[in-house]
Image 1 (cartoon, rainbow, N blue to C red):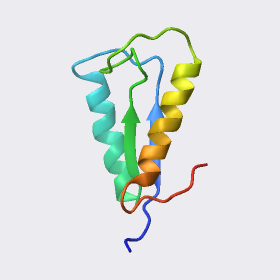
Image 2: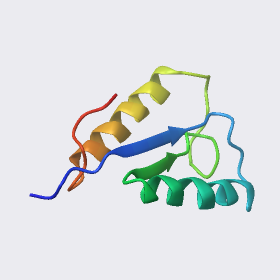
Image 3: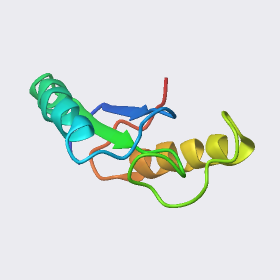
Image 4: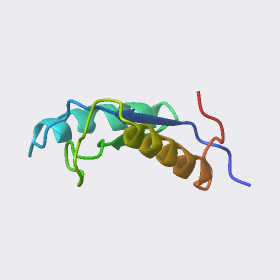
Amino acid sequence: MPTPIPCRRSSNICRIASATAPNERDALTHPYFAGHGYASVRVDIRGTGESDGLLSDEYSQQEQDDALEVIAWLAAQAGAAARSA
């Protein structure tokens, strides 16, 4: 059985689609966490960033349900640490 890998998930409701800004930040953030033993995942909230869908409201029930689904998916991945903080 593989050693569990802790995972850092980030979401930002204020992210706007951009050809450079998110990629530049990701280019610094993800390697940093990987170098310290973490998987690092950026999730664009539905209707923001590079995601499809419509953003209906801040902290909507849909947004909360999406976040729980992402956390469950991450926990189910091979080698993932199966707990959420």
